[in-house]
Amino acid sequence: MLARAIEPGATIGVVSPASPPETRAEVRRGISWWESKGYRVKLARGALEQDGWHAGSPEARARDLQEAFADPEIDAIQCMRGGYGSAQVIPLLDFDSIAERPKAFIGASDITALHAALLRYTGLATFYGPGLISFRNPAVPALTGERLLQVLTGATMGPVPHDAERLTVIAIAGGRASGRLVGGCLGDFVYTIGTPWEPDLEGAIFFFEDVTARPGAPLPGADRQAGGRPRRRRRRVRRLRVARAHVLPALEDARGGARDALGVPVLYGLPSGHGQTLVTPPLGVEATVDASALSVTLDEPALLTA
Image (cartoon, rainbow, N blue to C red):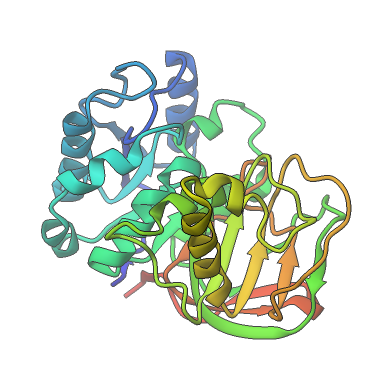
């Protein structure tokens, strides 16, 4: 399922399904960034609420997300930020209603759970991209901002751009493979395994990033993050091994070398994670990884343009 592309003049609905922003100033700066590009911004009712580490109760956060999809004034939905708690809202959502009004949905980090659930229950292609407070710094990296605008206006096919400043784009294992792009933040993704909204990785291109994992192992951090008894951890790790290729955009604390024992192409260094630059890849669409050529190509549109 595809949402429609948007153009300047459209309204961006901002929701906080996980943690709240830390300051009102960073919210104002994010809104100003959109307005400088010709867009309007509409904050959800509870976008600035706080309940400990969460932006209000699960019920309030689910209500805001549901209303954003239903609101005819809103053309695309951006999450305020990641943080903690987005999985709490999933059992409270009416996905049939969401499927009737598909909209571009953007978020990263903890929002991984919602990407997984939207794909599982509606088939909606979503975007692993910056939250509103990513634009709190006036000097938004050009690749981050301009790529987001390009994607939302319908430029969702073709090569995923590299960060020209980055020198460490490497093939951990060479080769070429195609499949549906699935994934998100590894530390959050592994907790979708075993849930009703667990993504299907069979034959997929598994895209993942994290802030503490290392590229020195085939599945950085997965065993540690999976939790539970050893047998359960091993089962979760095995689920991650059925993908046709792996794309590791950013392991921000990574040190040391890398090796591969998966027998599939593995590409490291795509700028889309917790780093300064993000290329907002769509999740749920067909893509091709050519690790030997250091490229990821999006093979089908993620938004309707007609």
